[in-house]
Length: 335
Image (cartoon, rainbow, N blue to C red):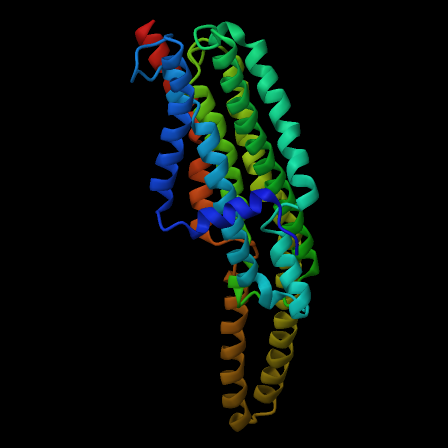
């Protein structure tokens, strides 16, 4: 299976002996220093000074790099947990495992350019906010290049997320072993889709909080609500097909259980009517066991996620709304 450049880079990052937070800090420092360095060389700012945007915009390079690695690794782990629900051979499993954790080699550069070009153009369009940084051909070239790289990486990650969510829905349709009493495989991909949604929220909230217009621009309210909607869609939509299958499986199991209860109840009533007391005891024991099984089926969750996952995601989902509310309070208090 031919690997794309982004997957080879992700492999190199995974092999790094450094913890993810240390690696992220290094990438952040390098990115910020390159941006600030050209300003030092041109005398735009004093040597060693890091203007706000040189520190803030490093986020857009660090997060997609580490996010890609994390989502790829977590996708492989999720697929391994889901594998018992499938009826496929090892070769097919290896193919799915590779596809859900990688970007096709022929598309990686395409997505990178698709994201990079508008990213660099947006810097020129918004030149008014960057006029103190785009002061010479050198600084302009460096800042445009880094904007191209950062936005290109973000689009590559977005493409990976879409690819993963589509494959999750496909794998849920292909599942052959639906066992409500063995929920671990059926809950495997909920954690992956939740993390994809969280990454969408993180980017939106950070962009808002680092924008000077956050407190006064009503557009950011729309952005936050849209981000919450996109995050919710990323989490729920790929799971809806499996949720329907689980609810149908529970309905069938309850129907069969009710039929058994009805049959043994009739037998018990017949034994009582015929005064067959020896048989009554056995039937009563069987009825008690069937009632316990019926209650167990009734209480089992028909949703393709565990309570911890849905609780954590719901908490994250309200972050943009909470942030908007708090920033509005702060805006009124200060201004």
